[in-house]
Image (cartoon, rainbow, N blue to C red; front, top):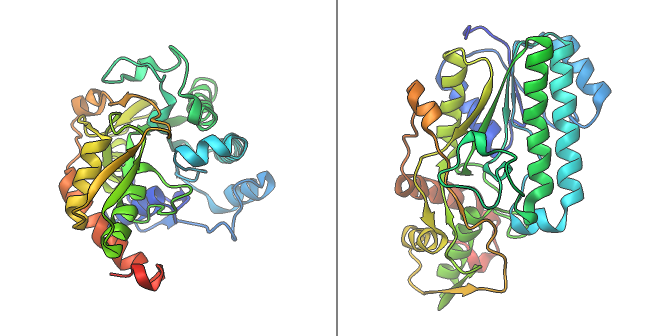
Length: 318
């Protein structure tokens, strides 16, 4: 990829988008284009079309999305399917109209069926029903990747879809009403330690198994795909290893320094029993994740405390 390419990072203030901006800067790409939501509402089709007509974009990294954990997905499915469909259709079609040849669409491992052979290969997509707690979001993401495939076939674009496993890292969402499992547990453990709590409650049984990828590794994979001139296809992005939610909670407690007991609330949903991605497609091309979970948790906790401790209630500040 040309170092002088004008690269639009949609959603640059989010966890994925900000990681992409950091990586592009580190790799010497000077022409990174960003817009805040106030400057460009990606749900406004006319505004998105005007932006692409004016900015002469060469590459789009479509990281903007409505995201959330089990609670947010289950309670607001209309928001999740509508907003994601509108954002992706507006951006992808406007990019095509402006003759943007290269685009990376970011999905999620939740696009795969609930009862899926493990590890999950890309070809397992649409082979059986989705997990009901987040099927609205999953359907929107499936539509986005299929839109990329369709435009490649009809218009000879070079639009690639990356499907990362569960992400974590800087600029994650720590709101307990809308966050994913790892940031939610990290904040809960932090507050439990500061409060001197005897126990920490974890949603579900603790038995589901999940895979966790540091967002900086996803950014590295994105640049790898672009720089190796991958022009189409669906690619899983993960570490190729998983652990139980119980093991994750134990690891977080160790990093945070919380020494109380874990209590599992079986009345809360577990979600998909297991999600481990087969990452051999990218591995065969030469890319693998580099940030181990222990290292990633430690750095993420330091960033969480630095960014959020001052905004927590005084009784919860470290």
